[in-house]
Image (cartoon, helix red, strand yellow):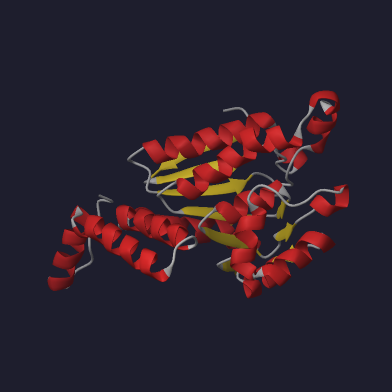
Amino acid sequence: METILYDVTDGIATITLNRPHTLNAFTDQMIAETTQAFKQAGRDTAVRCVVITGSGRGFSSGQDLADVQARAGDFSIGEHLRHGYHQLILQMVALEKPIIAAVNGIAAGAGCGVALAADLRIASDGASFMLAFSKVGLIPDSGINWLLPRIVGYGRAYQLAITAEKLPAAQALAWGVVNAVVPHEQLGETVAAWAQKLATGPTLAFGLTKRAMHKAWHSTLAEALAYEAYLQEIAGRSADNKEGVQAFLEKRAPNFSGK
């Protein structure tokens, strides 16, 4: 890994986008390494929660346009998306472990898409979100057209897309884009506390819940109910369910294994 940092401690995998001199702008290499890190976190049974953040002043400024300009003669945006960002976003959404985006600064363009693909977002009070695509005559990509309207509604999502205005952290909280906003100096400890709670929780149930909610976007109510019953049968046979019930009866805190 040359463009990101990857660390696993106490059940928490932390992925840090690490090109601070570009506000962590994405190159092909960083997209590939970030995708690989999420794959690795998915395979590692010791990992029960994933945090993604950026080094320096920003979360990610999006695509590195200088890198694109250097390849202008043979660069296909469509192929770039299909073989790069699409794989990353799909990997994040499919990962059946909770993902927290610790948004420490600007999350623009594809960086915004990556933040939105996380399950939870905690932002510094100095953070902001921006869909800068229209400034260069492009449409939003990196899953934004699917993710953002589901969070804020079509009108607000379209407004952000065509105006390319910054959405400050406080407004992002009011619109439901982020789950919490904290003073910048408290972001690390707040994210650590959330992540530790998730890393000691019923990981299987967290993953099945994620699967059920994503499936429900494309289902009728009857189909969603049937799928719930199917997944609940799996959860009900888990060690964590047995432990949770036993802990409730014994009036103690559960000790979940994530299985």
